[in-house]
Amino acid sequence: PLVSRGRVAVVQGAGVLWDQASPFVTRTTVTRQKITIELEGGRTEVVTSKSNPRAFAFASLMQSVLSGDASAFKSQFDVKSLKERPGGRWELSLAARAEPLSRMFSLVRISGREAVESLELRSAAKEVTRIDFKSLVLNEAPDETVRRRLGL
Image (cartoon, rainbow, N blue to C red; front, side, top):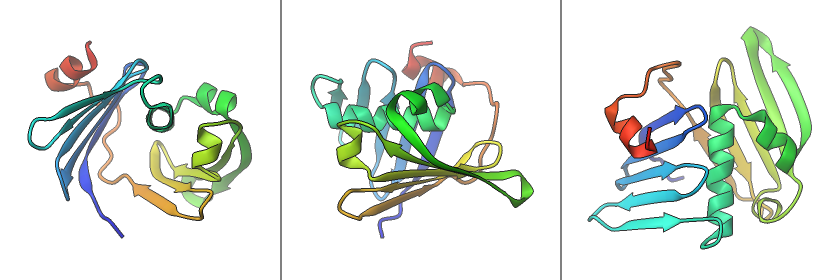
């Protein structure tokens, strides 16, 4: 398995910053209009829904999941199950309704308590990607770097 480490910042209604520190350095900024990926070495890629629909759909999914935007789930996914777990935990399983998400994922499983703590993506080819979010800090005001990158 590939284990990466980094930091994620979510600003409700504005976007997501996903900064990976290892095994390689990337800085990803996701907004509703575009994805900007700054790669180690200074190269920058900009992705839009027209330039790369699959990557943009995936990033939009991540933004919706992490910000708890249920309206995005309802428009793009069918809820397969919603389970309540002991200790206030929950688990939500979703199936994509249409392309490009239905081609990418056979199932999306999200779990957490006060916020999303785990995301599991199952591909049609039976590959599994699991993302665990640790050391969560909720309702933290965005700092200057976050505001600048999201254009706030």
